Image 1 (cartoon, rainbow, N blue to C red):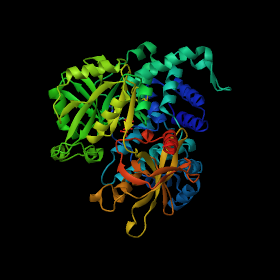
Image 2: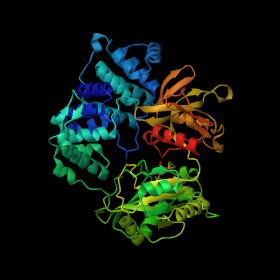
Image 3: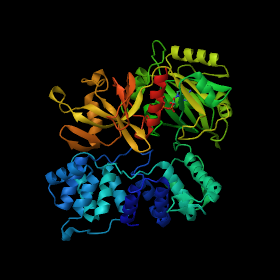
Image 4: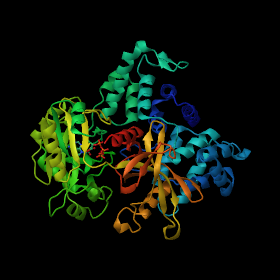
Length: 582
Ligand code: ATP
């Protein structure tokens, strides 16, 4: 398929905020897409060229794209920079300038989807000496062939900032509309409604796509299978070794609210302050994924051994929390202390010794060939109780009680806190496992005021001895309309890297994500997530969220968190009103 078809769809998507309309646009495009192009189209619609499980990144800074636009259009860098400052979007700049290309370079060939996709993937593989020039060459080659609209979206995709607003739920629905019978003709573009007579059928078919996505977290594969029909879709199975999204927990403020949400009696478990591991075992092969579905098996060799030695299953997928502990006192240590193990590539054995973890297993979603997603929690828990041989400070089940009593719950909560844990989890005995969802089957109750997880949206270049570093960070939370600012923060970051998360480290993380610079101020692609402690949430018309934080302070880097997993506006509103009550 020609890339222009996708570019036109992007443009239509950008011009509507109506979810059903977006679904309709995508479903039309999918209908026209050949099986061969489907995988690429689905990825490109999400603005990506690598799956979650693939840790490669395009990794091209805006400055390089600027150069490539200059090479392909003949305009000077300073001119392009000036336009960029005025327009604020390098994609639009490329669109405008490509329209002014001289005749002899005008659209030297038509871009096709496959070519764009493979060239974008190639960008990630260019490393080392001369790679900067090669990257510029590759992008400018694409831009030379691009029509103006294509240039806009090539640039935005390279910068990983597509801005067309395709949420996962929209893509899921579009797959159902495109391939499962009877849905599409009932969408009315004028009224932007679906014929209610078909509601049931509609829900059923969307559910079939969702259920497949729950089992294999791969939109492309699901789309390809859906194209073959609903029977094929229903045959999709969990594949051990391929990560699934994890189920998330809703938050409550006290034990009364916790029971109200999950019902009585409920399973109460310690909430360990470690990091989540989804562990796949197939015979003697163990694969470990983080909650972002990145593979970290090599970083945790001891965990691999614990599973091989203590879990009796031919195959299984376990949901666990790896909690760090002090090897001398045995006391749990905060997440921060073990977080450095996640990205570590060398001295693995030493790290395992210095920062030991205890694996706390709290759920199982697959056992000996059987998918347990629809199995009630109490039965899933019974399976782990049967198959795990516990060994203290190595591999244990999360400590639990079953209770209907608020008093007992409060005592268990206090015990958990006194041992250095974060609080309690409350779980519905009959709850099923919903990957990727924050349904009310699993609730968290924490002790201290929870830090907010925010994304960095921009910052300011420092001055004096802090020059060369990004200092005051602009931070944002998530809303249905994208990211909204909630303040600025610099406190908490250190000048010396040995003292903790430093200005230098944050600057290096932000550098490849810089989208715009105006004087000392910069705007970055929202991708770096940090946790912020604060005194209080205040109303503030000065920030787009309508809220500000009093005395914000950077607590830690959340490299285990994606920007779509941060604190939401809804959560901030709840926190604001609840702090008023108390
Ligand atoms: P938080 O930042 O509060 O840990 P989160 O956003 O990482 O929350 P949530 O799903 O909201 O994730 O909260 C549940 C998290 O608590 C799980 O992701 C898991 O990592 C951790 N956890 C610790 N102990 C347990 C337990 N016994 N059962 C389930 N999750 C647990």
